[in-house]
Length: 78
Length: 447
Image (tube, rainbow over all chains, first blue to last red; front, top):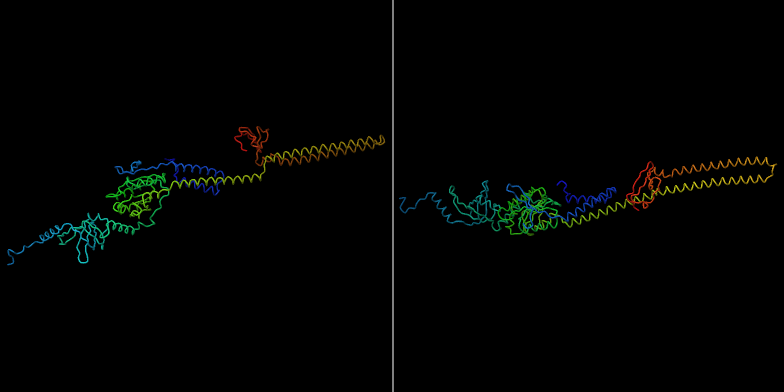
């Protein structure tokens, strides 16, 4: 899971940072283009994540040895 | 005669004690109401106290097995009703109440227990606002301690899925009422604390009677909530139900559904925030580029068109050259006409007599003429040289020295390109620099 995509809130924080830097106009033109491209990529990523996610629901059980086990929980089990 | 046949039978003390005990035993279980005083609670766990009213008192003992199931804490001055047996403690001859059960008088036992625990934990500072932790804004996983079957878990899952499906959900199923429920809930809170990705806990259940909700008023549950390393939201019963768990928890939700909406952000709001950020991003970039474009345009105006200057200069040079030639030719022509005129006058003047003088004059005139022409040529050359020097300063090569480059079509002999529109993609061009040249191919042109 080394190349797991950034966590949602990290991506959102990065996007907000990019917007701020761009609005202050402190970036050189080429950097601001790169920042814009990065920002658009983040927006796409965030929107996609918001749309596509299926909620992962698990149930926490204890094995006989006392170890904790996480098992997906079916919709019909509740 | 001290003794007669009718004389009463003398009992031993043991016999008397046995008779008394038999009497008490016959009385069976009794209910007695009174005030507790002189309460002692030694390490054995038994409770010793005196039950009294304003005119009498009697010793009482409640053994550990009976005392430990009390939900409330008996205390001196408390009015209680006890279920007990009377008996004699033979070794000391003391009559005692052996208490099997105890209820507070007036108030329900649970209500009293609630008030007592609340007062005690409150005094310990467990309900202090300072202890309350902020809920995480973006929990990775929401841990839920509740019954696996029931409306509460269903309501919470529905709300979590609708608001923020990015967060995972781990349910730790527990009994939420009846014997063992408190122990289950404590274990559930502890188990979920062991999962690294769980950022917030919801502990709760749906509505029920005070007895049904009782586990959430038990001290171990309160302590487990206080000890949790991740923030806990309590969600027990309905709006009106308040439990000890609610006081200890970092946040209290009136219902399980409300708890679910408390622990996660709302997807629609976040999506709107992302859209706003995207719009701001585009706006900021547009402003940034238009600023740059304006600056560029201003600089361009200041610079002028280098290509245009080169052609202008070349034209001026041609012009000067033409004027120079015209001037030179004109002057020579004029001088020649002058000479012709003189020659004519010479011919017309007296023939032989004036020949000598005429010859002298002609010679002088010819000398002056040569001199004048030579002077004129020298002047012209000097003017040409001055022009050449000025021209040199304006030469395209000087421009190139300042960093401009000339683009010629094809090889270095081709036409200078001043309009990108005349170039075709793929066309070969030669770029001339102050020193050296480069050959290039056109990738793309823009008007």
